[in-house]
Amino acid sequence: MSLIPATILTGFLGSGKTTLLKRVLGEAHGQKIAVIENEFGEENIDADILVTESKEQIIQMSNGCICCTIREDLRSTLHLLAAKKRKGLLDFDRVVIETTGLADPGPVAQTFFMDDEIAETYLLDSILTLVDAKHAAQQLNDRQEARRQVGFADQIFISKTDLVEKDETEALIHRLKHMNPRAPHKAVHFGEVALSDVFDLRGFNLNAKLDIDPDFLKEDDHDHDHPGDAQGHDHEHGEHCDHPSHAHEGRGHHHHHDDDVKSFVFKSVRAFDPARLEDFLGAIVNIYGPRMLRYKGVLHMQGTDRKVIFQGVHQLMGSDLGPAWGEGEQRNSKMVFIGIELPKDIFLQGLEQCLI
View 1 (cartoon, rainbow, N blue to C red):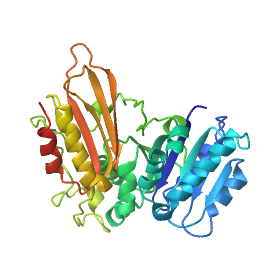
View 2 (cartoon, one colour):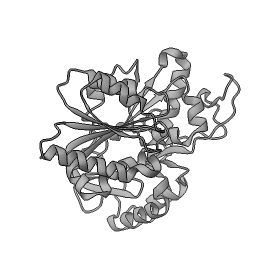
View 3 (cartoon, rainbow, N blue to C red):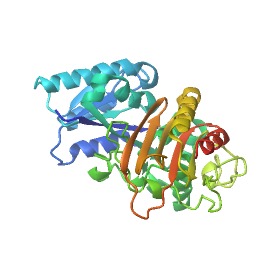
């Protein structure tokens, strides 16, 4: 049996997750989708909406916040679904997990790699995050869960852009790119989104065969890198940033807000020493793993003519050999780290010391 693709749908309260999900379930795509709903509190309104309007299998989990208690429940639900599928009691092609708006997607994602049976049955395809343009600035300022959801995203959908001015949307996009340069973003209107932007994105591959995003090496070059800087240290929002998306209530009153979820990039044309790099990455993951949301790289490694693809979430890290470097192609390494208050200088200096 081939792996069952799974998609995690996340986003802060009221961002439009259920609207998007209803839209996807209603599409004439011919796929049978099992939906795992996790709602905060006893009353599961969303499941009622979905049950009345679709013939999908709905597994309700109304037992509190996904970030603390759900991991065991999610594992048992995924096991149950797979067992019923094997016995022919349930027929579905893929799974969508809709998290509560207060959820940290990290533990949900980790479930797919920490249990051998689940890892051998499911492929975690991607984490989709919805961001509400009308309330995003305030939510990102006030709520770490909202910032983490952005940091984990493989694809960001921005809802309710019709309710705000164009410059507010642009300010929000600017901020999202700084927090997570690896996730493409797209405005969505009432959940109207192409299925090709939702399924089979292969955005989250910690599995043995890692696909390379062909645009990865082109990503986050949006005018933040200083060309003379070997590492491409890009600018970050800090106390001197007066970008409008950081303004609290009242446009024009800039209460400087420094996001704790940030990204930074390391670049070098020199090759890595494999042993030194492994030791260093092992050490930083050991210390900072819980704060490392997503990290990914295409590496120029001594001793191989092939690209080395490396990526991880929290303490889970994987690498694999990619395609050969092309004839005349500039061999270089580029890594992006997205995390909560990560010590950028320690990471960049440590990586520099791993080079040949």
